[in-house]
Length: 166
Image 1 (cartoon, one colour):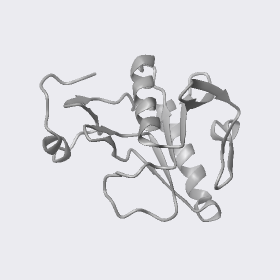
Image 2: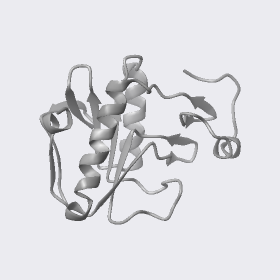
Image 3: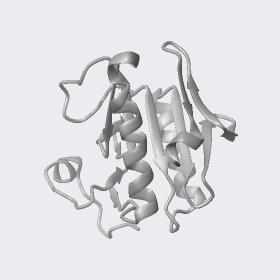
């Protein structure tokens, strides 16, 4: 869903939205969330990474604004960064991972644009979860590929998808 009139970046950054919204080329785009399946999976993913933060040297956060280009801000369901908590309030450096969780109202065209924004920004690992069918996908420039585990290199991280749905 979008609001009508074009909005400046300054207005977007100085306005509180509940829940937070994406900003795409002057247009405020609402995000679909708020249902139990979405919230439960988002919590499970965050907890999984937070519990292992020292072992993997990662910092995970939900619903963090990320400036993916000069005129676009996205708010991923979960971001994972390498190392300690960053000082910047809006991430302007590509996170290590951006994770999105589908809601029943999500349209593939909007999801594709969002995932492609992360890849264009330089996010090395982009994942999409569908809680309705309990599946996960790795998003690449070639499209989405179903995976049974989330796997990264440097550092090596392996997350069994089934563990997140338990």
